[in-house]
Length: 481
Image (cartoon, rainbow, N blue to C red; front, side):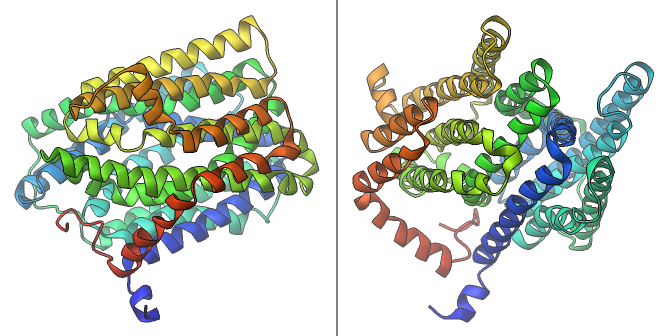
């Protein structure tokens, strides 16, 4: 393969920029945690939590637009009308954010831990809504350069500015950096002129977006609230310092997942297009490819990362007590990948209502577990993540159950359990879980060895996919097969 061919491949360049950015974010997380200390890092975690809540409460507008653009890929006029209508809806959503700012000023500004930072967080949230909409359009069109810029500029600015000061002053600088990064990204999106302004907003299109988006909103909101509710429980029922430890452990453990989530992110429109096919054999083939090239690869990467967690914490004395939590969070977020494909299948088949019920049920199970563990049993904060683990399992089980029914496959408890955890994945996962729970940290080489021994044949199948990514930059486009 020629170097020129690789460097001209937009998918390869996008992945490269994302992985460099993730590496920078990983390093930044460590330095920020050290410079802020557990208390101020806990406050920073609360600010990010507020932004997470705003990001979730988007009424499903970006998700709905994504599906509608894929389903109307052959009619650019209809697509333009949907984009224009979505922009109107985002404008109305930002009016709600302004209302929230007013309520905070009247009733909560004197008692809130985050204080005046809340106002700037609200302004940033408004920019996030617009940039999120732009990202949907650019991703569906396969324009990854602008998306990569948006996803990279803020982490880079944070990395540059984190050395300027420390403690409380650094919090204000980070929020200012977030604001500047979103403004620059918004300008960049409009300058590239991929957002059509010739479309016409209409009540019907707005209704269609909200109608589909309502259940997608419930789905996305409940899905992301599973982990957000866990973080909220720790922030409410445990000291700020312990929430700082939790935020640190989650940031590092989840960073492993980001490496492969990047691939899923860019192929999402393509997956929707593939999985809405009426050809059941083709759909099953797509799901099998996802299992081999995403699920198995993610498990292997996480077990390898767990070998290095103790070494990493050796250089960060303030956070050495978070090793067990890091491992448990890693095992928890890893479980969610076992569902990849089936939730998108339900989405592609217009089963948004079913998806919303599945995620709501999973969220309620998680919250019940969190309250039981924190209020009734008063366990140490690191064990609260077990409720998230249970919630994720319920989510995976229900998605695969109903997805299998759509494909006319036999459904039973045993069949679904095997689909969630084939034996090749079950043995390494169970061993990792037991080692984490009982703090046998020196034995984390066992799940990695189990995985390698059981999946040598599977790993060979990653090579053709890697070659396809390197050679064909058009494979993510919804108009390409």
